[in-house]
Amino acid sequence: MILAIDIGNTNIVLGCVDKKKTYFIERLSTIKTKMELEYAIDIKMVLDIHGINPEKLDGAIVSSVVPQITYVVKEAAEKILQKETLVIGPGVKTGLNILMDNPAQLGSDLVADSVAGIAQYKPPLLIFDLGTATTVCVIDEKRNYVGGMIYPGVNVSLNALTANASQLQGIGLEVPKRMIGKNTIECMKSGVLYSSAAALDGIIERLEEELGQPATAIATGGLAKKVIPFCKRNIILDDDLMLKGLQIIYEKNCGNS
Image (tube, rainbow, N blue to C red; front, side, top):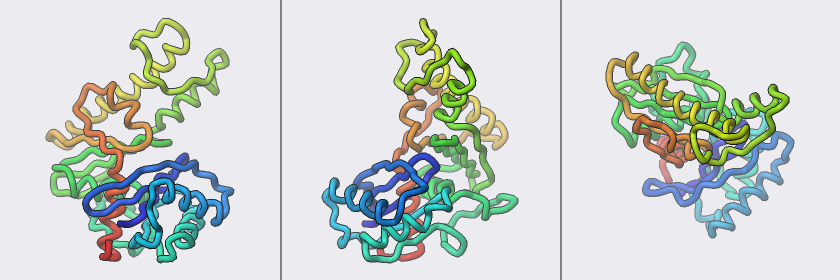
């Protein structure tokens, strides 16, 4: 069993995982000013809550899209586990064939999502990760990463709406009572969630047209649970896709998980 950590712009996702299962998934706020000791305390507390002894973990792996704190979190994990932590980057074996103009530009989070997707689902694949941004990984029938999409995430869109419209107040993303809102709050909730769901449905249709065949659609990320229920297309919800991908990459490089 290993500790897998994904550092995103809004949240840090961490969990313990092995070949058979994911034991837990927790989220911490991404705070760029935190020191190594503060993140070490956070990690230790999460492990304690779930009754996991750090000494029994084989190691840890980190993927990150926030370079400022990548090695702060790495060192924090090493402080708790007393074992070297693998960071996804140049030189790390992933087994993913990336057909991009510059493969090095592909975020380590998308690499982990894709590695897990290929291992678990039938290609071609469309993998949606709903976080600060919504990203789409497109994997063809030969298991090649052929490209993708990035567009503003649900909360980014909602925050932009409330920040730029003086009469609209901040709201949460609770499920609206109905699609046709009867007041401003209902209209905003409905608009944000249903437009996000419709975007996924429409993107799947258009990407399948470009691929020339049906694809398996998968959704992961912190906001996936809120949006997927409103989609008309069949989209598989996989909360721990990222962690499973990190476990596979760890095994390819360290071979002792």
